[in-house]
Length: 104
Image (cartoon, rainbow, N blue to C red):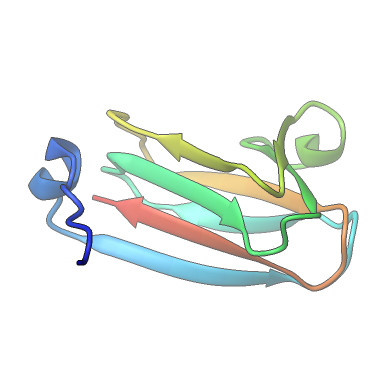
């Protein structure tokens, strides 16, 4: 028998969902992803469970002042109200695919 998933209220209120699969071609290289105004929820994960992701919201900081996301983990920021900003991210492994889901 199948499982039923229940959406959180924030997802039910979101009118626009944007999913991006981004390949970080080189290890230790900073890549950027623009986040639009009105972002309510951000989900970030790596498809490679052995890659370590470093992320920041200031250019150049993903290698200096950053948060770490282990490959077996995901980041889920909820109930946020971001204005336009950029997510900067790098991986410890080459050709790492990351999944980004934005809810507006």
